[in-house]
Length: 304
Image 1 (cartoon, rainbow, N blue to C red):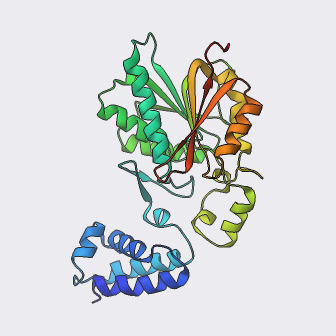
Image 2: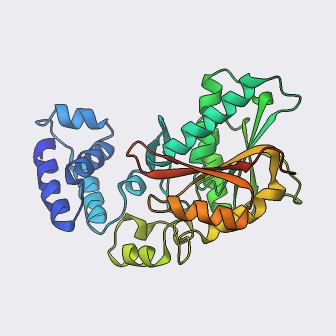
Image 3: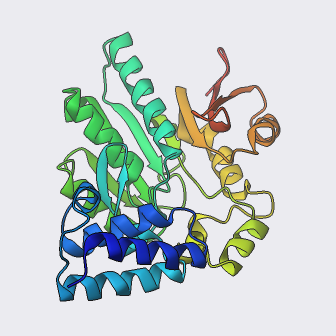
């Protein structure tokens, strides 16, 4: 009977040869998943025997990983902002960079709740929700801060019904189905009235030619929905459409928080200047010091 250490070491060699950037992590996670234990158990018990069925399942997963399939899809879950989300090919796999967007959204919500008494609930919308990562993470964080559901309404929208089904599953799994509503829409829903206090969005922002290269290379993005990655020739086509909707869709004192690519800091400011004259567009960096979040709002005194 094979031992955990020897299975991991053999898998590392296979994955390294296949081009994995994290062969040891991949191997340990997939073996842990096959056995039904935490990764720490695999690391701590290298001499533990592995059953025949678990070994067979592990080797199948390694073969799929060799072809480039993401570990998150193989395990059916991804850790994000302290929670475990169900993920599959219905939606993009949540990235660590997006946790910055969640943090800034939570901070914005809490600042508005504590600044003054609100006559109506604070209205938050997650545009292009995908797996529901942002909406669910925000809802879980507000619950942990004992914010009543009646104080903040969260709407998660996506153009794809399959993605919305996945987002609903994640909301229910984390006990926030009563805090997040869902709607199918291409960007902002509704009749064009200014109704959202906080608009948050992680929309496709990868340039089309880069997506083409990733698909050709059979990297992880090759297995994800292209619509969730492809931002057009300059990467800002979908984001630009959302900017066009902000004057009608954002409340007078509202704010939009948009994730952007690390090379789009200057481009998003120029795009906002063109599409939203008189508006403020400030770009915040992530933990690596790279442009990551664009914060847009009307300047004081500008009509809504």
